[in-house]
Image (cartoon, rainbow, N blue to C red; front, side, top):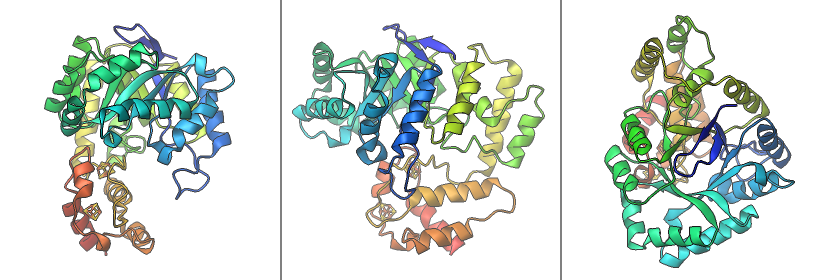
Length: 376
Ligand code: SF4
Ligand code: SF4
């Protein structure tokens, strides 16, 4: 296992972090129905094999993730890891709410402190609202009371908003979306470099772009196959990130024990070294090939859910993109199933709640109308 130090604090973390937002379920249609036995076994197996960073958040699995993590970290496992959770900033209406929510989360996690406490999914609007509520004093006070060690934030917006937030507080860490396809998107590679210059450790989410990079289309496979060194697509996707000196930990939302095993194998052989010029060229070719195929660039993050009318936006967008990546494939049958389950576009009232919530700023309503016409 590759380990890296967070700058400033010096805290040592495994380069692979366990993201607890896609845990196995007993009922695939109920996000709260975590398969506890399997999920606990997976988390503990990862820790037994060197993972020292566990990431959860208030809303993951409809609130059930923090409860599950509490159980997984019993029997001495808490002491072996850096634990991260996130303040649901959208629930904060007044200053006292921040400490009340933190206390609620510590109780759910059954711990007296967390290591990293992140302001969740910050963007331009949210940081402005939090400034008015003096979030800095809250974070300072939470550190002083020993409830959190490292004040941090996670982020979904553009480069300008990222830089504004980066310079707003002496953060220990920022969690950003980064992968082979997103170098110019959201915080951008330039933003990651700026965080590094300020001594702010970077934790990466969406390393596989919602799974898209794990199952590349034929055209991308050919690009990988032509390269003299052979790795799996997942291994290439992680290598792109762990070779960046600013990136300390890469979160993987693991859903099966097989994924845990696969990730452990990849990180057992990971070495922090600069990419060769040939590798940089390979990543550029892979990105260009994906860009020429994808139609929505939806990551499946589900921030647009629930839609008040029940439209299954991530299912539709991911289905369309996956079909676009396979020659001759169509999402027509998949869409008919979504419609039969009541999640079709015909229910959309164009309220645009989803567009306001989408961190990728996708023109969701236009996409939905076009796909509905095409697939119905
Ligand atoms: S615009 Fe349509 S899909 Fe989006 S939240 Fe409103 S009803 Fe749902
Ligand atoms: S449409 Fe946007 S918010 Fe919804 S799942 Fe896709 S990327 Fe996430």
